Length: 358
Ligand code: NDP
Image (cartoon, rainbow, N blue to C red):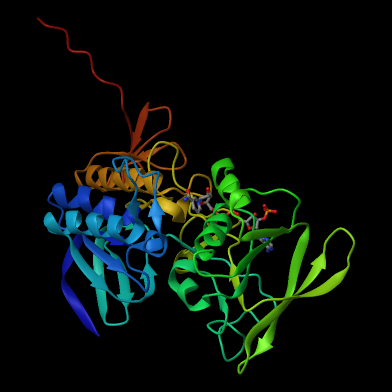
């Protein structure tokens, strides 16, 4: 393992829309950011197809193409990239210490843009092979695996936009796609619902849970065991592929016990800034957003996080979750802006002194 000599001004974890937008802003501010990317460079948009709602592309753009543009723009201004798995991060003192498989790095500020990953049901048959049928007919990514299901009978589990998008996409290949949803109405946006309802290759099974995925290593997936959640009635539904599309989980395991999170694990950021509870650590994109989760909002918060990091490095105060503001030297401005608490505990007034012209 090598200890990188330099201390980075800004290290960004993640290379989706949030991380790369933060990189573009930090690089243009001459902070020479390092982006550390993991197993899915480019984030969730690299496994989606047409993106029709990212402003600036009136005819739409393919997700991977959009992320290639983000990356080229970040590179153009001098962003450094490192592909490595992060093992450990120590936020107890600045510079922060980041241990990857190959390196130990130091960062004066950290921008976390590690996004979110697909959630799984935790039912028998779902785990990756050989324990289950994952990779043998079970997937969470239609764009990655849809091609392997030509003329097959497929089920998609979930009732949100992801499930509708996956179902629509899979009809390019599949003989039939059946959406199985645990309630009687969809969570997906109206436009996505209408697309799915209009698609003649898509059926729906309502108020139903999937209890088990059936099949063997030799046959692959052969069916699912369903349970009607209103009547309790169980039955087998024959199919050759299962796509799980029930939402995402924020990638925050590395920060447990170090950063404040909500009950699901999304990082908490301050009201008007992207600051976490640790001064100098900022979070942006899906890792801190359980509400909007759009590429454009991720990019927006990436921009905010980079500007916050830049302010902090410039010795300017940045608001933290308590409403206080804090500088890189550890000076705190009280939430009412009336006092400054110096690192040694001394309290001084934050009131501007009136100096009248003579
Ligand atoms: P959502 O959280 O919106 O939907 C998850 C779906 O899975 C819900 O219908 C939920 O059911 C169901 N579900 C969750 N857990 C379980 C479980 N244990 N068993 C059975 N069903 C379960 O996640 P999405 O990934 O669909 O969307 C996330 C965000 O990304 C949304 O804001 C969405 O708008 C956005 N998005 C936008 C796209 C686009 O604009 N092109 C494409 C994809 C996503 P229930 O409804 O009962 O809670």
